[in-house]
Amino acid sequence: MNGLTLHPMKEIRIIIQGEQVKFVTDLLDNIKATGYTIIHNISGKGHHGFHTAHPMFNEMDSLVMLMTVVPQEKVEPILAGLKPIFDRYSGVMFVSDVAVSRREHFSAPSSDG
Image (cartoon, rainbow, N blue to C red; front, side, top):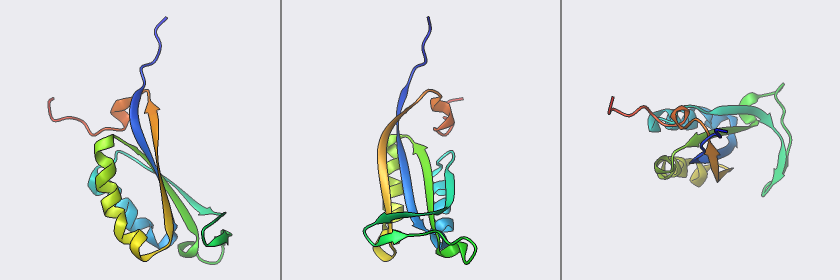
């Protein structure tokens, strides 16, 4: 029986204010992350207390979570790019080890042909 081969990658979850989404998506695009997921209007409790989503008032004030899966070598450039956001605004980021079965979906195509 043939099983799937798993390949190690890193998952990055970024929780920020909605007004910072374009900055983060531009960063991920520039670093050539092959994709990301955006979840708007999240609620939760953290360092600054409980935050409730209020999407009907102003989506820019609500919390947003962006998730991406990248190879290890893209983690440091992403962290460096996010530093200005976390130096100036509230937010949090998590980096986790994950394994994917279709590595080519998460890595830029090589120029080897």
